[in-house]
Length: 68
Image 1 (tube, rainbow, N blue to C red):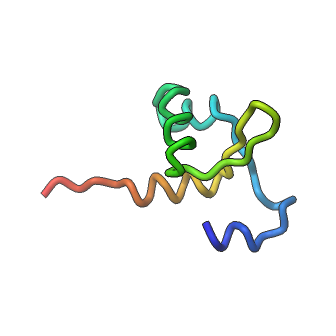
Image 2 (image 1 turned 135 degrees about the vertical axis):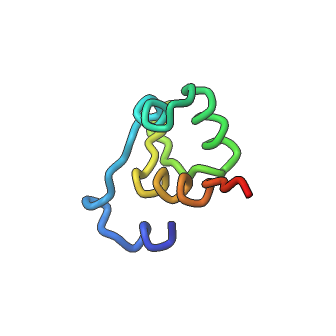
């Protein structure tokens, strides 16, 4: 995520909680839990959260599980 913060803000794509939940095929509550736990970085705008798209990709890359 450090590289993300160095990019111009206009180049960052932000997703809503609903969009992240749909992409990950989980409930919105699961996304809220990840955000509140600090596992998934987000920006709070009023009462809403916006999650950088690259943060979602990074979280999924780090979360892959390989059965051995």
